[in-house]
Amino acid sequence: MAGLLITFEGPDGAGKTSALTELVPQLRQIARQPIIETREPGGNPISEAIRRIILDPQNTAMDKRTEALLYAAARRQHIIEKIRPALAADKIVICDRFVDSSLAYQGAGREIGVNAVGQMNEFATELLTPDLTLYLDVPSELGLQRIAAHRQSQNDRLDQEALSFHQKVRGEYLDLAQEYPQRIKTIDATQPLADVIAACQRVITTTYADWFK
Ligand SMILES: Nc1ncnc2c1ncn2[C@@H]1O[C@H](COP(=O)(O)OP(=O)(O)OP(=O)(O)O)[C@@H](O)[C@H]1O
Ligand SMILES: Cc1cn([C@H]2C[C@H](O)[C@@H](COP(=O)(O)O)O2)c(=O)[nH]c1=O
Image 1 (cartoon, protein in one colour):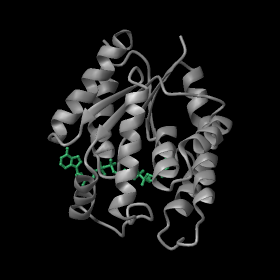
Image 2 (cartoon, rainbow, N blue to C red):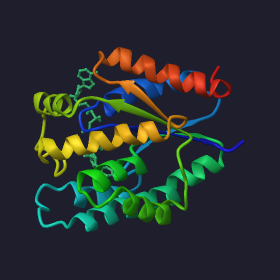
Image 3 (tube, protein in one colour):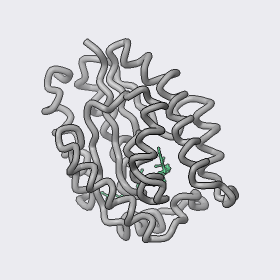
Image 4 (cartoon, helix red, strand yellow):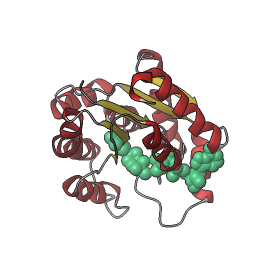
């Protein structure tokens, strides 16, 4: 058995972090293998340091290709230090964001091009692809409203982007979900959080029934 890589994706404010906070402990109770929860950019000290640089609102001078390279560099280190060893040990890795984020945010949002960003990530990941991706879909306006309503600290550099940027990001996620329907399952994240969590759990446990009691 090789491990399972399950990723969560969505526009800012879709509720991935909120959903995972409740979902992962629930899944741990019924999983037959250990679950590793992690996130991108981040997941280990080097990648978390890169995260701080990328998201720092002071870094207004950052070029969009520099940004894309930094996300890919953080991802590479994350895969080497954490994801690959966990998969090799047959664990279930649940990751908040992965390559689809780069395709949506840098490829479409920053208009670098989805193919160019995809190629760069093929180099970084050596083609490691999630087994399953849950895409939490919300209209960009709602995602941004949620962030504004619950803001506890200064917005990060990407949260501060214009609505049109976030709309391009969501548009690319919707295209990816159409292109890869076997891997990417769309969850309506405008529902109450409890329903979003239940829907995610249902998709994971029915798709990988053998992995759960
Ligand atoms: N289904 C929901 N209904 C209403 N509010 C929600 C829902 N899901 C999350 N929220 C609220 O929206 C805000 C953003 O949620 P969260 O931080 O989980 O999103 P996220 O997808 O992780 O966003 P980001 O990628 O920007 O970190 C939080 O304050 C959370 O309480
Ligand atoms: C992995 C990845 C992330 N992003 C963006 C998406 C978000 O705006 C931030 C990460 O913050 P979160 O609160 O942890 O969701 O970074 C991106 O643009 N490209 C990527 O590859």
